[in-house]
Image 1: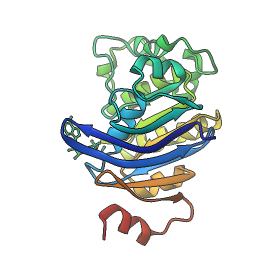
Image 2 (image 1 turned 30 degrees about the horizontal axis):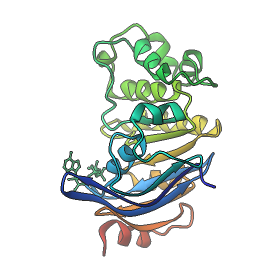
Image 3 (image 1 turned 135 degrees about the horizontal axis):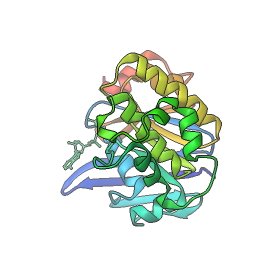
Image 4 (image 1 turned 135 degrees about the vertical axis):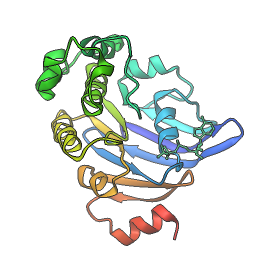
Length: 232
Ligand code: ATP
């Protein structure tokens, strides 16, 4: 049984349908890359898994339990954490206070302040700074660290590399490999398709809210991705 299993999920923004009959599964220790053009429904799907949005139809199960309709804090307490697009750090808090906000789920595990500082050593130096005084890349490290501090079993990452310099993106994805090694399940939204496929086990492409391709990331061809991504 997959750790996360979505079956025929429909999601709407008001009257506008953004996700149509999406089914997917993610196993413990597996990385699934969600790709698709702007507006394809990737963020909507992640927000639905975290309980920030509600599916209008279909089933969402986490570790065998239905999470459809549960409030976001209950879903977080079960072990689902998100690194949101745009990071959404707490503007009035320091780096360390932002990290500690991740512990509100009261889940124990390997991810402590010390473990996050070992993963991103520069955050230790910056821990008393206001989070918004940091560079974009450093803020992204705080956002990843904050999610890890909740010791999730499933980590959802929405566009980790958006707007960041190439060297910082490399650094964050190097850390990502170490996070993977802890055996979490990860769903990753990434605009850079080559990178998304390189860091994932399986990929799933959305086009206008529908799944157009899914399978092992290693085997997928450029032509298959182009057809699924653009609907050619
Ligand atoms: P991006 O890469 O631009 O973040 P995405 O694949 O994450 O795109 P979503 O943000 O999930 O796509 O958007 C899916 C659809 O839902 C789009 O048609 C978008 O215009 C619409 N949408 C997203 N947010 C809202 C909202 N708050 N109100 C109404 N429609 C929305």
